[in-house]
Length: 242
Image 1 (cartoon, rainbow, N blue to C red):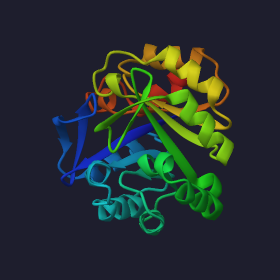
Image 2 (spheres, helix red, strand yellow):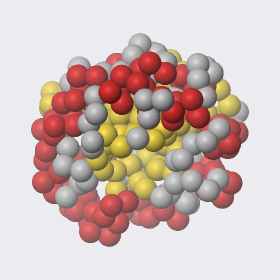
Image 3 (cartoon, rainbow, N blue to C red):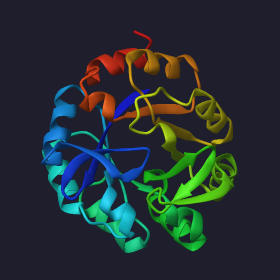
Image 4 (tube, one colour):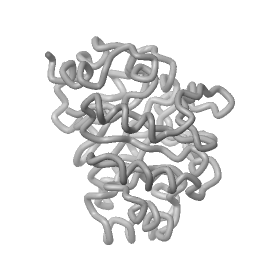
C-alpha cells in the first residue's frame, strides 16, 4: 500500500476541512504547490489533489494549480473536484492528472461514466464518500440514504475498477480510521480502493495495514501530515508494518 498525501485546494490555498464542512477549514499553505513538493520530497509516491471549489460549484476552478503541481513533481497525481462533464475530465488530464477522481456525476449520469470509462478506463477513479454508511454527494453538501456498498456494486458492474472510500465524519478530525467501513468496502469492490478519513497516527496506519485487504491499495492522509504527527516516509514504513 502507498501513502497518498492530500492536497485540498480552496480559494487557491492548501486547506483541510473538518467533517467535510466548508466553514470549518484550516489553511496550511498559501500555495498548494508548496504542500505538494514537500510531500514528494518526503518520499510520496503519488498525490491526491482535490479542487474543493470545483467540488462545491460543479465546475473545475483550480486546474492551473494542478498544472503547476504536475510540472513540478515526478509522481502520479489523481485529481478530483467538479469533474462532471467529459470536457472537464479532459481538462484535468490536459492539466497533468494521471488519474481523474469522479464523484457526483458518476452516480447520476450513466452515459457520462460509461463514456469516460470507454475513453480512459483504468485512469478513472470513483470517490464513494460515506456519512454514517450512506452516500454523500455534491462536494459532501448533499446527503442520500443510499448504502455505499450498493453504489460500489452498481459502479463495479459498469466497469469501474478503482475507488476512493472516504469516511466523512472522520475526515480532518484525527479520530482514527473507520476499520469496519474499510472492511465492508473491501468486500464490495471489484478492483482496488484507497481509504481516506481519520488517520491520526502511525498506529492507525498499522491498523489499516493489519486488515490485510489485498484490494486496499493505499491510504490518503491529510491533517496528520500537515500537523507533523509523522512524515511521509514514516507513514510508508508503517503501512508495510515496519
